[in-house]
Image (cartoon, rainbow, N blue to C red; front, side, top):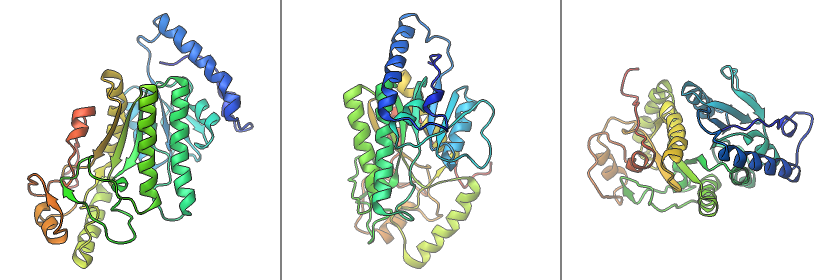
Length: 333
C-alpha cells in the first residue's frame, strides 16, 4: 500500500537527513497508514517494495523480477547500476547506515528486501565488514518497524554456518545440512550474518514482523555456474576442497526467493524464518554421498542423498514460502 506523501527532501542529494529529523515524518506516515486502513484504501493498490543493494548483482535481478510481477520498486544503493533500471523504478541514493535516509527511501513501501552488504570478509578491515553489515541490517529493520512495514526478506548466507571463510579447514557436522545446523563462525563476515539473523529475530518478536533470512549459497548465472563448476572440480582434485559441499543457486531462483518471502509474509505471516536457498543439485558430477564419505569422513549422513543431489536440506523454504529451485547448470535454457 502506498500513501501519497512527498519525502523527497529526505533523500535529495543536497541534504543529508538525520535520524532525528525523520521522526516527525515517520509519525506522519503512520498517521496516514492508520487512516488509509480505516478507509479501505489498501484494496486494488499496487504494492511498493524497497530493495537495498539494488545495484548489485542479485539486487538488479530482484528489481527485474519484481517489476515483471507488477510491483513498484524503490531501488536503494550508494552507487548507480552499470545498466539503467527498467522504466518506472525509483532509484534512490542511500547510505544504509543512516536511519533517516533509509526511512526516506522506505516511505510508502509495503515490504523491504534487504540485500545491501559487503559480500565477503576480504578487501575491508574486519571492523568495517562487521559494522557495515550489522549496522545496515539494523537500520533497515528499525526503519521498517517505525514505518509499520511488517514484511521483509534479508540476505543471509551459507557463510553463516561458519565453514566457508574459516582460516583453517572447518566442515559441516552432518548432511543434509538443515537450518538447525550449528553456526560455527571464525570470521567476521559469517559472524555479521549470524548477528543479522538475531537482529531480525528480535524485530519479529518485538513488532510481529515476518522476516525470512535467506541463506544463499554461491549465486551465479548459468554461464557462471558452468565456469565455477570447472574450478570446483579442479579444487576438489588438487586439495579435496569440501567446506561448501559444492553448492550454488541460480540467480533467478535467488531473486524469486526474495519475492516469495514478502508475498508469503502477506498471505500467511510466519515470523522469523532462516531458510536455505540452494539449487537441488551440486556443481560436480560424482555422487554427493560418495564425495562426502571421501572428503569429509567424519560427517554424519542423516538421510539418503541420491546421485548429485545437494548436500543441503531445502525443504523449509518450500514449506514456509513456497520456494523450490527451478534451474540447474546441467539443463539447457
